[in-house]
Image 1 (spheres, rainbow, N blue to C red):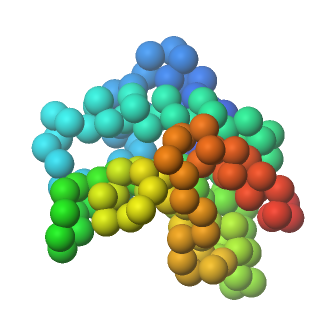
Image 2 (spheres, one colour):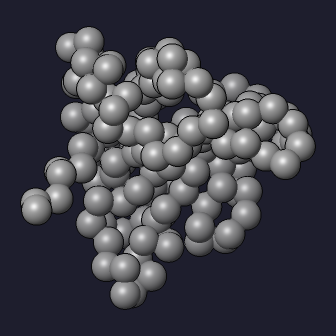
Length: 145
């Protein structure tokens, strides 16, 4: 069986521009604890946030997937996981380039937290998505593609 092609962030944004949110919802969610009915609205919100990705390297070399998290304490929260499309998993390239944007985890001091696998911890916190995506757009410049 052939593996399904993973979409770049640029392709995801183009699908959203064409109103294909249900298809994106089917493709991008990895795990969720919210109701299935909530996924479409969450997809629209999270894909909308991807409009703040301006870095061409990120647009063409990353895919994303979404997770709705259920912490041991506190309410559910969503995250966007940024996965490099081309990475040699035997050479730690994925580890160096993979990062997660957590949105509204009330256990954190900031509304948006960027966790990187290279540091295995939160590397940046922001109270606005604009600040978070400015960091992400610069963060991708650290990675060699």
